[in-house]
Length: 241
Image 1 (cartoon, rainbow, N blue to C red):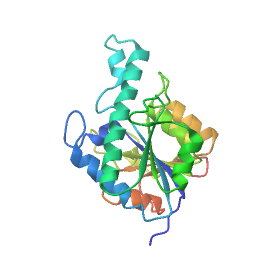
Image 2: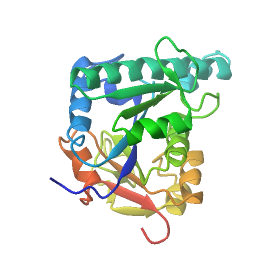
Image 3: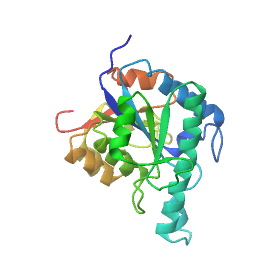
């Protein structure tokens, strides 16, 4: 059995990751693929929390620019993350993997309220903990929620799953000469505006020395490979990363 580099991780999934080939909503095939990739590490001594966004259903920032009050728009976006979390939990349960859905916004019919100590206990019992509802407050992104929850559950690393191989100096989708970084510091990420995560999330990680690894979710086996310490994607850390 492969030996993990990290004992407890926080995996950040964007809502767009659940789109698959669709332009809106949830693609069941993509959700099943993600569940399978996470299931591939379930035989390892690894505890995993998952924070999922809601951009495949609703984007609060975008809607606020169209006239909806920003706080109201953000709350609507938080509800979208709950729907994505339910879809993920269902996919885990179909594979026989125990999971718990915890929400920052109380809705006890579908999810437990987020309680840090309870989340840690679930992790220790081998359950995947899906954390939804963002921080529970408007004006904060799910990137910030991921950094916050990673620190609260004492994760050893924050894994950010994307649709590209890592962090580039420019958009690789529109620039053939884009160069991928193997390693960058928190300070470089902020000063160069590399858009790894929002500034609040990166600052939280920097202040608490929590490493971030950005990698391509769509390459099969990458979650397991990253956890096992393979040089995949871009590592974001302190001055000596």
